[in-house]
Length: 255
Image 1 (cartoon, helix red, strand yellow):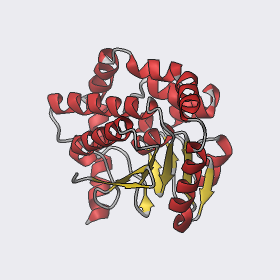
Image 2: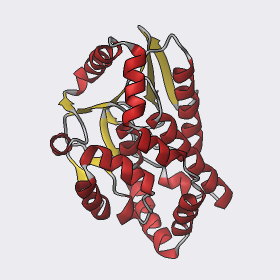
Image 3: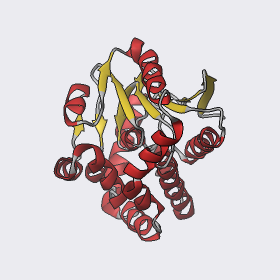
């Protein structure tokens, strides 16, 4: 694994995002995440999953600088893989906890809300889905996932505004469950997942999948039309112009 780190501790599978400063996601990172989640799912000795980032960043979301250079085939492969990743996380039958260690906009937020419980580090961080202002279409499956935690009205307004939330605001609306100091987040994530794994496993896991049945069904649908919409928008001159401006700003910050 080049872009994530994995570790098993007391029957809990840890996935730590580890790509550069901000853990921005490209297709190779997505593929590694899919492989790791499948391993955690298939291993009967694994009882739960903790997904975390590094200090100041859970993940900044999609690596726009890299994705901007992808051709049409690469972009189709990326979106297909990204939706597969979300399906694997949403349908993961064992307890899963996100330790949101810093900023978590866009794709980072989507990954986090696939999990059963979310702790977020306190600080000047943001979380939420800001795809629409960037010029990226939000699939219905992601709206349903956002609505699962926020309710349809709040999710609808927040998505169309591209609203990002501070940790305390995210907790208030149910986007995260706890806001904690960064230096406590891993211990508390472990404590929480251990509290979930103590229950009778079949009852807990079957109930989870029952409660998520409509979400899982959304991600199991044929995604051809969804990906077509996303890609058509991605190549529009207006979207490319927005992306170019964002990339120029990001490049200047790095310099």
